[in-house]
Length: 358
Image (cartoon, rainbow, N blue to C red; front, side, top):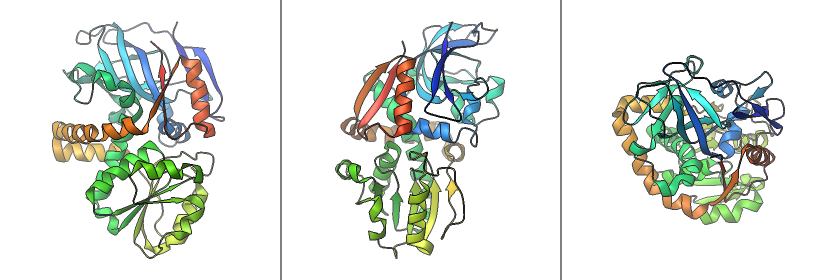
């Protein structure tokens, strides 16, 4: 009997381990045994926006609970699909469970898509599983960094591409909230390399030294000093924190000088991440990465898109290694504790948590 880690949708810091549904395979299905996955602020965002963005729907759970999606590695433990062999290792979108079923379709040397009917209503980007033996981003000695940064870096790559493709909406400066978050500083590094806009990071007072040491930002400002930024500079806000007070402070300080406001995450999930309301300047727009993926797949083709991401990823790996202390824990119970710490904001900015199951 396999196990699931179930999170209460009403109290995200509460989790329980339960027996999973039966895993008997039908013809064409495979059972993936989860090896390991990362837990970051990205997973908190999945939970906070689980209803709005359908993240809860990828891996069904009993009423009132959810299985938070994670990114990591799994191995084919059983297979009734002729093109998917037992022992194949994959990278992709997983539940916080020790095993789960997929219905592989479109199997190629590079991987497959899960064609399970209930997953087809959501973005296909999350249904793709890459065979590690043919994955251009995979190396055996960087698995932890891949789990921690690869999904976040993909988002960072897409934010940077989306904003650059829009000429930064006329902004001369891009401002990030939650500047210590991995998604934020990976995006900031990509933007800084373009040398076309200034990059500023907003963070808590305790994280100012860490964020400055990253070297990804031209300016680092604690949240209580937002007013010290020059309000006349055309600026673009990338909101990783989802903090209503921070969002309001940025909008009221820059007002019409704010050219665009992009909502990406909810690291400050308990401080108004889902609250709306009119603000001065442009109203916040939610960033949905799969839309950009689909556009660039059309523009560049799958191979061209993959190569651009791979090149950017390899250039970022040294930064990932230098800025992160990998913290490894074992088992679903440990996953529940780490997720609760993330929810409570108790995880240090330089830590990267990996959960090993098998």
